[in-house]
Image (cartoon, rainbow, N blue to C red; front, side, top):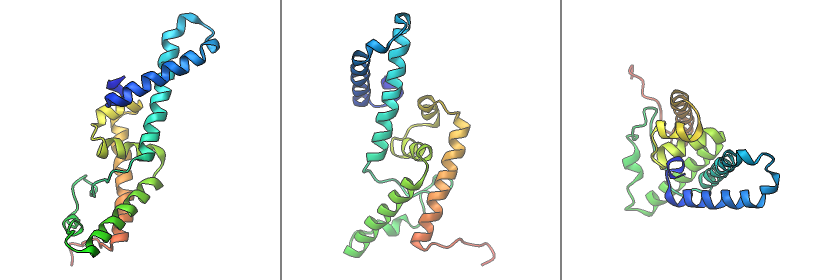
Length: 164
């Protein structure tokens, strides 16, 4: 289960919860020959529920990135904590960023968190979610663009034209 969750403690929790649910619901199992498959299905559902809960309850910060996943030029300005004003601005920006992430669909949010907070590869995310890597990349790109556009509006960052 650790391979699926990429988190040993979460894997232990999933395993324990899955077997507890299986034990409580053993009377619902109609075909005893499919016990292993039945428990595995329960475990996958428990894993999905726990990951969803972990994503929804996450209090970590997320890096500020551009469409290519690179750090924004103005991040340095945001990290000047020598003044109370800068600290307050940083906290407000992170709160806005979290708000924008919460506005994404559950699927987009899950991809962003797994990719950028949990630092999983697209291959690992694909294995966990049963979604093609190419689809994940496109969805991540679109989700990042949504966040970036809202964040740029919030920060008052204007697009640079080559004609300026």
